[in-house]
Length: 198
Image (cartoon, rainbow, N blue to C red; front, side, top):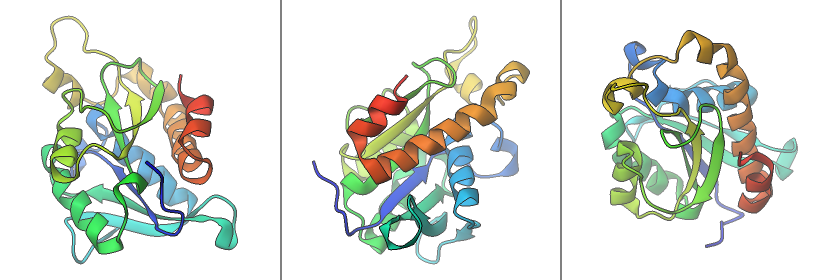
């Protein structure tokens, strides 16, 4: 599957809307796109045609060499992410191969990254919703949050804030994930994987 060089990239950070969820593990996708928006000097605004907040801009080299991106935070809950992302895909005419979901991943150690194209949803409700809406052939930047301790339920774990120990390193790992997204968009999946898959 090849990406379309003339089309924009749609970078969807997955999370749950509302201040009560802002620091949850499940919202690390929002954290990454917030940082990307800061880097390109944009602030999120509600989209007129989709249930999402967006920032439009460019990443990579300054000027026309930079790649057009639409950064998005779906404003439906995580398990309904596919609807807003599909609305944005259609509005901006983005091919599925130019879509990136940035999301939390239980089966990877905290802070580690895995970049991939396509594949299953691994029980992640945001990916499940996106795949149901548009098929599986989009990119994923998977941000490791590790497994819940002891007998804690997965649902409770992902909806809790990062621990105090994790928060000490969180900014570094979010920064690295934002770098990985930029690398994916500007240099392609293979180069981004070799640099950031840990």
